[in-house]
Length: 184
Image (tube, rainbow, N blue to C red; front, side):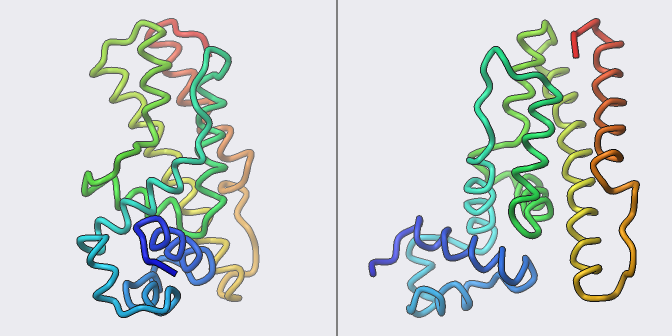
């Protein structure tokens, strides 16, 4: 099998889902592909670039924005996309921090807010605030799930469940609507 950037990202996603972000290494990916780690560097410059490519792959599952999606639907969709891969929220947050991603999770929210009349800088700030909430909530959900699976914790946290997410989302969306009169 020829090693390509796509095959490297696919192998990385498999490792991420099975073992988690701490065990996602170039060596482990190379082993999964049956090549030496140096072969990966022909396609991927460094680990940060790899993580950004994996982040892009995860975010490619986001629904595209059309006239029918609401800000709340976008947020719920992003949460589900992140929950579909182990440690995805942490990986996406780290990738956003270094700015190497081709896809950003808030692009659709920016478009929705811009269509509603928000200025470009304010739409970007509001959307990023929502992304920060979603990433943090999902990161805690995923961390807690890992700790429950490992037997470190014995009980779930109601603040980190669906209702907790919906309350935080409602607070953000109602705040956005209050500031500008934007429909929810």
